[in-house]
Length: 299
Image 1 (cartoon, rainbow, N blue to C red):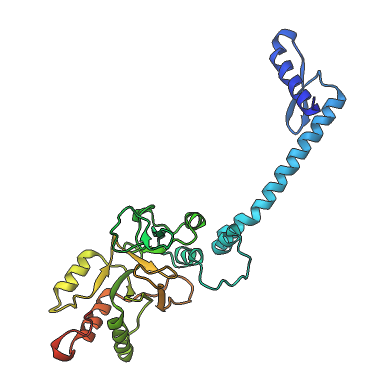
Image 2: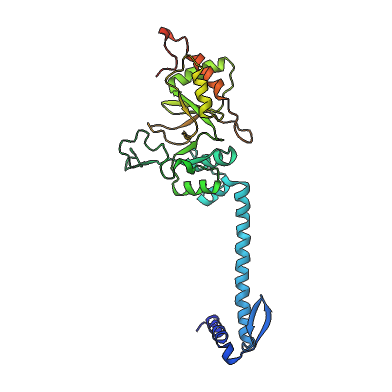
């Protein structure tokens, strides 16, 4: 029988029969353990060695965890890369969704979550149960939109389990909102806005639509803004409270990749965002005067 198991059995028997046999128990200050006096010196030495080894393993485990905990708190992106097996300094050919998600959540404090993604051998259909999904792969499903978070641990866990999941920004609240319009019209509008010296924030581009990120706004504020306008291009879409926006480096629902047409500022903290009124006013003004009295922002 194993010596440790033999000693353990003897301890159990002696403690169980202590009342009947009146085994005297004395305190031996060996790692705070109570030892029956019936143990001989050889058995006590063996138990000291066993407990000493366990204590050493415990100390080694704690020391190995401390650098990881410090890395997680100070550098969540590097911590997630280490957990995912990515070597420090490695330069992937394309931006990794996990890297982008952690940058949004930790550096910019934008609440994010993974999109449902695509399924099938050719990844042609949406992974959600709807066979006629109009935005395949590019919407929340499980987890739902309310699960969006800035917690790097949750973000790392999501993308560790689904590395290729699309990256979604939950708009509204304290997070950025957006105004989107058709890609061709958006490219023309940005040229006109640049010529007028207007400062713009980040711009997300897909092959079909571009989205101009703006500071958070409420639905009441947007309603008052639109009500005061004589004309608002019908091609504009507003992504506010309760909405979401697909971010790079995700795959666009209609094919192609999502990219930054105007990248967020590299300065520390949250990227600067313009107010919704300034962007809508500029887009409405840029849309006027098209040939035939139409809108420059039409589809």
